[in-house]
Length: 247
Image (cartoon, rainbow, N blue to C red; front, side, top):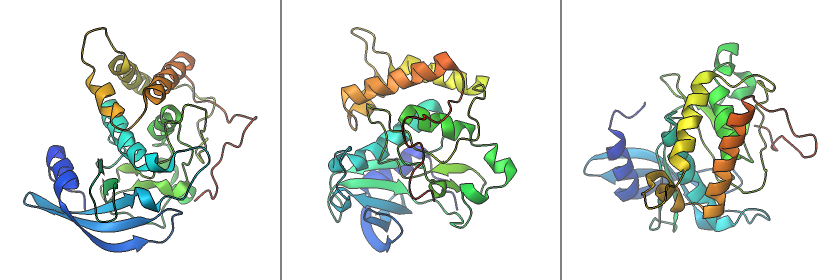
């Protein structure tokens, strides 16, 4: 069930709770564990992705994937969309540094490829999120529906590259105008990403813990481009637009 704890408390437990490994998820290419985070403020089921369990990649630094998971949560919160479960990066964990994310109860057999028409219509914010995060691996099983029917997105280790890496199974809205509500939120995000000389920038400071300045600049450029075009793009014919496997 969804935790009723305040977000600050959830993040404190994720960041400071004692981690006990419960089992390993076997469906991913990288080591991923179910764990319990125990803290005086509460106990949570979490997903732990240690950096040392990442398969080497040619285009992403392997040691950066766990930090990108945390950056995706920061981006989701900045947009106000609450799509990514609470996620932190911890330097000290049972198998070394890695990301710790709140585990979301869901039906693993219910995913993008068998979503109801009504649930597919709810995916516009997901598509917009992936466009600006530059998600290179949006598989159908990475979109969860929790017991309260809220959409939750997982697996963001392959996001925020400076080069165009978008690969997703969700092209349902290609050519469609971006909804005004999403434009307003993206405009606010763009405002938060702009640095004023001599003024603190809380969002950029949070993202700098996980991403390079160049990657944050690329995020800002993608956001500006999406707002300028104000439509969901079509797949790029010059490159592979789908992940593999798709689920």
